[in-house]
Figure (cartoon, rainbow, N blue to C red):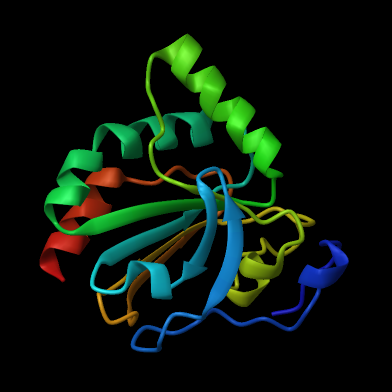
Length: 170
């Protein structure tokens, strides 16, 4: 797919990685420091998910729900990683706002993909919406194989119970 008005580095012919393929490797800055994906998560299931923007109502409720369900994910040997094309400072201010105002702590890392490199590599750029990411979910197994992919338009929130159901099924 070709993106339209994304950041220069993200404007590439990216395709969505396919189920059964090895997850694309990348390094990225997060709210918890740098990560080397998928190497840092070897032996664990991972849910890598993107959101359109910090400080938006649907994204906030989704992050709060993921945070509340973290014990269920951890019990399944699964780590959560969020992503958007916001800067790490924005992610940190947003998670601080959530903690102070909504009394929920976001304990998983959020990738600051402000250059759009990871989103482009994963096919997460929303066509026709500039540099915004779709609401994507990738379930990656302990051997770094993509096992499930869900893509939603910005306007549609995710069903977290479905994500945990799919993880259990896999």
